[in-house]
Length: 334
Ligand SMILES: NC(=O)c1ccc[n+]([C@@H]2O[C@H](COP(=O)([O-])OP(=O)(O)OC[C@H]3O[C@@H](n4cnc5c(N)ncnc54)[C@H](OP(=O)(O)O)[C@@H]3O)[C@@H](O)[C@H]2O)c1
Ligand SMILES: *[C@@H]1O[C@H](CO)[C@@H](O)[C@H](O)[C@H]1NC(C)=O
Ligand SMILES: *[C@@H]1O[C@H](CO)[C@@H](O)[C@H](O)[C@H]1NC(C)=O
Ligand SMILES: *[C@@H]1O[C@H](CO)[C@@H](O)[C@H](O)[C@H]1NC(C)=O
Image (cartoon, rainbow, N blue to C red; front, side):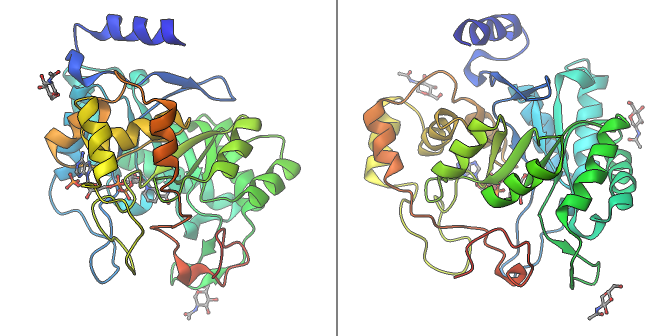
């Protein structure tokens, strides 16, 4: 592993500024590889709980900056309304000769209103059209919960949806398939019902929600974990109430960051990498995009990891409580 990382850095040094680093690749259970850090492209919620709609080209710019900074992994979803901009960015960088399509790992996700078995392939084809590409690297069931497009709950079982995912993969529309926001019971049920083990699970992982037993389960079953909302509540409350510490100015975090001449967000991302998680931090700010991938040239001590482990309070930024009436709601209901 160490040797390979060194080689990758040496090989790309001529194209990518040294300080930005390159995320080492991790093997998936189907033989493909996924870069160990990616850029998120969800623009979040407004104060009144609506999804922020993109109006300009902020995501396209962000993804172009990210590719220039050495990112080779982009996370999007049909529901984010950012696939078109991701596609433009990737195709621009291909046209500029910076990357080839096969150099970049693109993940997108099936929305809850396309869970019928025969709805999966058409939904993915629409995503591919927006992304202007002939395949994605990873297609995820975004949530185990099905909804009609009028937002009422639909009882479709995710086992049915998974059959559609397997068919999409067989057609070559996606290289790998996986799931997001599934719990251990749901992963188990899926594995008992299907020969195809998900290549990846995407779930919320941050200092307040470290999910050690879920990570252990995935490691044991060869499922790679990508971690969303990697900064959690570091920059303040994003949800309903006052989240537990730490904030970005927490003295213990500042002390560790200062020691390595890194920022606190970099220390947090580094910790997640050391947990074996693939973080997908979102930023549309050039300097932060560059900062967030520069986490592969230092390592935390066991003592520092223990300090960071103590912030785990099983606190979710994204509980989506209004789905708790679904039989497939994946989280604790209290
Ligand atoms: N599967 C799912 O259900 C699911 C759910 C949520 C998220 N996701 C994915 O995970 C990605 C990341 O999660 P997220 O967007 O919720 O949250 P996040 O990446 O933890 O945080 C994003 C916020 O942090 C700020 N930020 C980024 N880097 C920073 C830095 N170095 N210093 C200071 N501030 C910084 C960003 O600001 P600026 O952009 O203004 O720089 C933005 O406000 C999403 O974009 C999406 O792709 C998936
Ligand atoms: C799609 O990508 C191709 C290059 O692969 C490019 O020539 C074409 O202009 C793009 N189409 C759109 C609509 O962006
Ligand atoms: C939502 O759509 C479903 C499926 O078309 C339908 O059965 C249901 O009655 C609708 N619910 C409401 C509140 O409109
Ligand atoms: C600390 O990090 C900054 C930003 O990456 C860099 O410009 C500076 O040279 C570093 N200082 C030392 C002493 O390494």
